[in-house]
Image 1 (cartoon, rainbow, N blue to C red):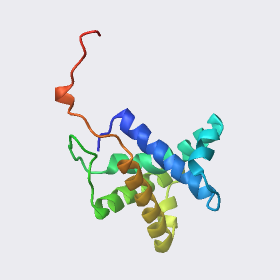
Image 2: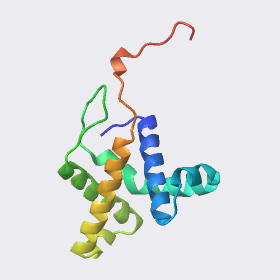
Image 3: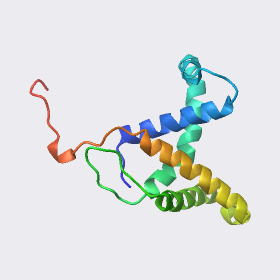
Length: 138
Protein backbone atom coordinates (compact mmCIF):
# COMPACT_ATOMS: atom_id res chain seq x y z
CA UNK A 1 0.00 0.00 0.00
CA UNK A 2 1.12 3.53 -0.61
CA UNK A 3 1.52 5.58 2.55
CA UNK A 4 2.63 9.18 2.88
CA UNK A 5 5.93 10.00 4.49
CA UNK A 6 4.06 11.46 7.47
CA UNK A 7 2.04 8.27 7.95
CA UNK A 8 5.11 6.06 7.79
CA UNK A 9 7.02 8.32 10.16
CA UNK A 10 4.18 8.19 12.69
CA UNK A 11 4.06 4.40 12.41
CA UNK A 12 7.81 3.99 12.85
CA UNK A 13 7.84 6.37 15.81
CA UNK A 14 4.98 4.52 17.53
CA UNK A 15 6.61 1.13 17.02
CA UNK A 16 9.97 2.53 18.16
CA UNK A 17 8.32 3.59 21.40
CA UNK A 18 6.78 0.12 21.76
CA UNK A 19 10.21 -1.46 21.32
CA UNK A 20 11.59 0.93 23.95
CA UNK A 21 8.82 -0.07 26.37
CA UNK A 22 9.51 -3.74 25.71
CA UNK A 23 13.17 -3.22 26.58
CA UNK A 24 12.12 -1.81 29.97
CA UNK A 25 9.25 -4.10 31.04
CA UNK A 26 9.48 -3.52 34.80
CA UNK A 27 9.95 0.23 34.67
CA UNK A 28 7.19 2.78 35.00
CA UNK A 29 6.73 6.15 33.32
CA UNK A 30 7.73 4.95 29.87
CA UNK A 31 6.50 8.16 28.25
CA UNK A 32 8.64 10.31 30.51
CA UNK A 33 11.65 8.05 29.99
CA UNK A 34 11.12 8.24 26.19
CA UNK A 35 11.08 12.04 26.30
CA UNK A 36 14.29 12.09 28.35
CA UNK A 37 16.03 9.61 26.06
CA UNK A 38 18.94 10.96 24.03
CA UNK A 39 18.23 11.58 20.35
CA UNK A 40 20.70 8.92 19.23
CA UNK A 41 19.02 6.32 21.45
CA UNK A 42 15.60 7.25 20.04
CA UNK A 43 17.11 6.89 16.58
CA UNK A 44 18.27 3.34 17.35
CA UNK A 45 14.77 2.31 18.46
CA UNK A 46 13.19 3.97 15.43
CA UNK A 47 15.72 2.38 13.07
CA UNK A 48 14.94 -1.06 14.46
CA UNK A 49 11.23 -0.38 14.16
CA UNK A 50 11.58 0.85 10.58
CA UNK A 51 13.55 -2.20 9.59
CA UNK A 52 10.89 -4.41 11.13
CA UNK A 53 7.74 -2.83 9.71
CA UNK A 54 8.44 -0.81 6.55
CA UNK A 55 8.61 -3.73 4.14
CA UNK A 56 5.43 -5.19 5.66
CA UNK A 57 3.63 -1.83 5.48
CA UNK A 58 4.35 -1.62 1.78
CA UNK A 59 3.11 -5.20 1.32
CA UNK A 60 -0.35 -4.38 2.70
CA UNK A 61 -3.17 -4.32 0.10
CA UNK A 62 -4.21 -0.96 -1.33
CA UNK A 63 -7.02 0.47 0.76
CA UNK A 64 -8.09 4.00 -0.21
CA UNK A 65 -9.59 5.52 2.92
CA UNK A 66 -10.35 9.14 3.68
CA UNK A 67 -11.29 10.45 7.09
CA UNK A 68 -9.85 7.49 9.00
CA UNK A 69 -6.84 5.22 9.16
CA UNK A 70 -6.84 2.19 6.84
CA UNK A 71 -8.47 -0.95 8.22
CA UNK A 72 -7.04 -4.41 7.55
CA UNK A 73 -7.95 -7.92 8.65
CA UNK A 74 -5.68 -10.12 10.73
CA UNK A 75 -5.06 -12.28 7.65
CA UNK A 76 -3.94 -9.24 5.63
CA UNK A 77 -1.53 -8.22 8.39
CA UNK A 78 -0.20 -11.79 8.55
CA UNK A 79 0.28 -12.05 4.76
CA UNK A 80 2.03 -8.67 4.62
CA UNK A 81 4.23 -9.66 7.55
CA UNK A 82 5.27 -12.91 5.90
CA UNK A 83 6.08 -11.14 2.64
CA UNK A 84 7.90 -8.24 4.30
CA UNK A 85 9.89 -10.38 6.72
CA UNK A 86 10.85 -12.84 3.99
CA UNK A 87 12.12 -9.98 1.78
CA UNK A 88 14.10 -8.44 4.62
CA UNK A 89 15.72 -11.69 5.72
CA UNK A 90 16.49 -12.87 2.20
CA UNK A 91 17.96 -9.45 1.35
CA UNK A 92 20.37 -9.73 4.26
CA UNK A 93 21.24 -13.36 3.65
CA UNK A 94 19.75 -15.32 0.75
CA UNK A 95 17.78 -18.33 1.98
CA UNK A 96 17.63 -17.10 5.58
CA UNK A 97 13.83 -17.28 5.73
CA UNK A 98 13.76 -20.85 4.45
CA UNK A 99 16.46 -21.77 6.97
CA UNK A 100 14.12 -20.99 9.86
CA UNK A 101 11.87 -23.64 11.33
CA UNK A 102 8.15 -23.31 10.71
CA UNK A 103 7.65 -22.42 14.37
CA UNK A 104 10.19 -19.59 14.24
CA UNK A 105 8.67 -18.27 11.03
CA UNK A 106 5.23 -18.18 12.67
CA UNK A 107 6.56 -16.44 15.79
CA UNK A 108 8.41 -13.85 13.74
CA UNK A 109 5.37 -13.28 11.53
CA UNK A 110 3.05 -12.92 14.52
CA UNK A 111 5.32 -10.35 16.18
CA UNK A 112 5.78 -8.38 12.98
CA UNK A 113 2.04 -8.38 12.30
CA UNK A 114 1.36 -7.01 15.78
CA UNK A 115 3.93 -4.24 15.28
CA UNK A 116 2.59 -3.36 11.83
CA UNK A 117 -0.95 -3.18 13.21
CA UNK A 118 0.22 -0.90 16.03
CA UNK A 119 1.97 1.29 13.47
CA UNK A 120 -1.11 1.57 11.26
CA UNK A 121 -3.28 2.47 14.27
CA UNK A 122 -0.83 5.25 15.19
CA UNK A 123 -1.06 6.86 11.75
CA UNK A 124 -2.84 10.19 11.44
CA UNK A 125 -6.29 10.44 9.87
CA UNK A 126 -6.02 10.32 6.09
CA UNK A 127 -6.98 13.44 4.18
CA UNK A 128 -8.52 13.54 0.70
CA UNK A 129 -5.65 14.45 -1.67
CA UNK A 130 -8.12 15.78 -4.27
CA UNK A 131 -9.59 18.22 -1.77
CA UNK A 132 -6.19 19.65 -0.83
CA UNK A 133 -6.61 23.38 -0.28
CA UNK A 134 -3.66 25.74 -0.30
CA UNK A 135 -4.19 28.80 1.90
CA UNK A 136 -4.16 32.18 0.13
CA UNK A 137 -1.20 33.47 2.10
CA UNK A 138 1.08 30.89 0.46
